[in-house]
Image: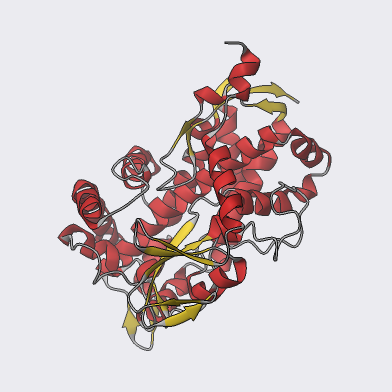
Length: 402
């Protein structure tokens, strides 16, 4: 097989993009008989679902199998909470994880990115996930939380287990969910113990790290419990870093498939923030968000019963022709770009500003250092299970220096 044939081999993401384009043309709401769930596919419908937690609940605790090892994690995971519990926890966390805290990380993100790229400075080939996209957010969040960066191997193992998706297929039933939870329980148990120990250390030796600030956060005399802090820290460290890893890898893949976009960004680096938003629209790392109806409701001309499971499909909504001009084309200069990749409403992604900053700094340094970045063989790209996350696990590239 020639190098061109290797290069032209179809990517897993090509099938995904084609499927999302097709779904975006299938109407606003459809019922999946096989999985007995509803899919919301248009931009207005998805935004309405995400903005109405009273009707479309994020709490699945009564519908999914119970697993004791997940209880501590769930106490601080406000992604799966409804008001008023969600409001209380997010308000407390917001006292410690402020915009000023995120902005203050910028110099360290620049420095860590430079150190990681210096480590591959003498190579013409390297795996961009292994060299940059994976370690960068791990190191940043570890420093933010005050946990030893030397433990990042642990974090990598945890994230690989939780988001690899090796235990699930595309069609989930309750028995499969239960098996997946049982397989993940030892990892969650290890994480809980690690973070509880770290929190107790910070209680005895407080500093200015985020964990210490979370311990000090207080609203109307209410403080976060150790279990709530453990759940939030685990969410930030594992889910927060894997989203940035996916965004960076997806950007490199997308720019490789659209070389004119990469050339424009080198010539006009000020366009990079818009380019990142288009990558987020084009390849959302988590393309579906689950919700549960709390009552019978009319949506998109269909009647959904109470306790129905629905999936708000971000991948399709981000391609809605009623909201986006030429939605099936990757436009690096698209602006405005009202994609829903980071969610909408009270559950808008808490770590979105950090992910955007990391992506902007990392991609700018890649484009500045290398005049040419290419994925020489699509067959060498290894993907995560797209039913779990849209992300490359391995992404070998060839580079030429500026």
